[in-house]
Image (tube, rainbow, N blue to C red; front, top):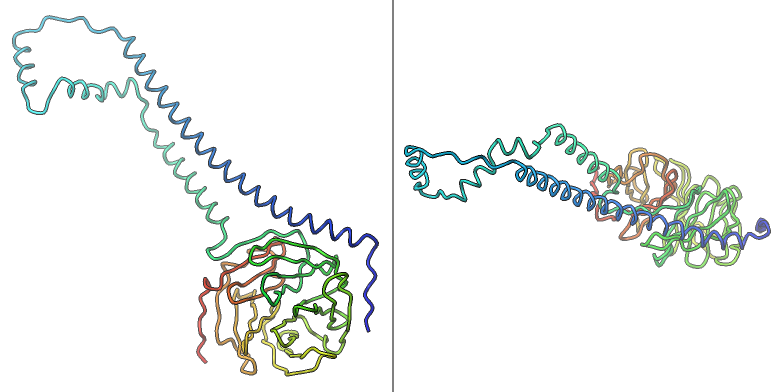
Length: 362
């Protein structure tokens, strides 16, 4: 049997503090975004008010200028001019009010009172609007995806609880277990987990299973997650674990073996299959279908267990993967694909209905 590594004194207290710290981190990030949105709205409102104030000032200046100009001295009107004025006034649709309106918008009045439109300012404003719209669109995740910030951490072994309401992942460097709510993406707890150098994690509803340098390890759920059993022969070359409700699956290196075990008093072998030649940060199995994630090609691939190791179905994921950093793990249920990334440290949720699966011809 494998003895659980001793934890530093005060580990439980540190984990308790960490559990409070990281949910608060996500809440602060959400509040920060709301403040930024409110600030942007306030700036737009101030700009509108400033525009109205400038318009009122201009109108007042024009009004003062008109009052300051003395009215011209009346001059005698000849009989010919009086006759022409009468003829013009008799035209249909014209009135003294219309004539006054025409004089108000005459070129002389515009030149003396109102500034003209500067084409350079118009072009500059349009460019700024385009830049703002582009930045906003680039900053938003694609439709069907949500991103939840995580504390800076080394991540391994993203997995779902059988009931689907929780996700788990490890920080093997600091030997921590993170519990995240689904589908909310909030960190609910951070606890010490004695599994240094762990590469993968699975949870069967009662026990946790990890794999590292010592092999596959069965952990007691809750408390200190002490190691109950160790299976060194089953962990050789294993880099991914998955629990399907009945069997524990252990996947090896690309082109290696995918083994199925029936947990009980021991890990009883219950089948062996070939792994795809392309590496994946985890595995997911539904019935007789194996799902892997080809991060290099940006694709979610589906394989028939026991068949040729060529994907019979693929879905593009390039729009949902980070431009930098790496994908450290993935998990799937009937509704969502979950991705955990490093640099930036995020948990990403992708609605499977947004993915376009393409069937490959045999």
